[in-house]
Image (tube, rainbow, N blue to C red; front, side, top):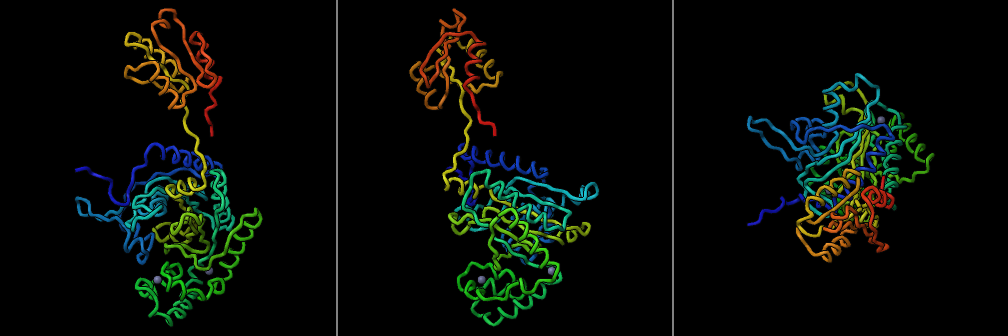
Length: 423
Ligand SMILES: [Zn+2]
Ligand SMILES: [Zn+2]
């Protein structure tokens, strides 16, 4: 019996990988412009890190983690998100001691046991970034503008930015109480999950997807009316900075995000054609998380975006991805010239030319048709005649012009035609 990929996981085949590499390339360049450097952390961590970091009452920790015991009985978890691990590393290596501000990014797989659907996988790849050390709203707005910059470079259009604040240690409990009181009146109409959330984590009811819950939260008190003056000022500044650079956003009072650690700014960038799973990037500020994970009292903010969904959105907008082009195909005529051909293709490749060859002995016609299929710009014929006369027969596949030249000339002809995309 055939063994297939596990439900919720998938293979990224070469044609799709071209798209992933392109996205990563663009993103890495832009991160560099903003001073973010890459960190790689392990795929699995101690389970406790996520319980403390993400929050015990979140869906992720309660229902979605891949947790297992290792052979010594220690509880480990495949990382469901990237922030906890990045901060664990930041603290473990005391990165805060050498710089007042640390800006990190990562690219890698995350694991969540969720119901698989379009754009949602149990293993999905995230690009994430964290700016650690600044409380300034400048950073909040800068991170959102950086994301917009990334999407513009990728050619993505029609994205919407949603923005909210979830307050801080001081003002959120006040709002929490108000919200609880308001929702308690309709307790019986809430879904089972939300009945639970009512006492444990009422803010999460605000983004419940169940329609009866959506109806109930329609007129809930707005957190904007409960903010302390610090949170109010912070939120106003973020909005002002975004206005300044003409980034459009929608204030969404229901946006709370699924993680407990957020404070003040939360945001989500979405593309509506993606359907139910329409967020392409999301994040927020977490001013207590570093301390809660055992570090110094230090603010932070970050975001993550899913490559899987970015590809779907880009395909939906028919954005083309640059493909590696074949410069020359080497047609080998007869086994006698194999050594000559082997040496020739080696020299071409050493000259940074993308050269392809079919190893099996095929007719010239077959080899030309293959060269056409892979879109090779030139064909070089390696036959007995060429070996004897010590010449290169090269054909331009577009102009059909064929000429006999020496090796240096052949290389020059090919290189003059190659405009390999340098992004
Ligand atoms: Zn506050
Ligand atoms: Zn609900």
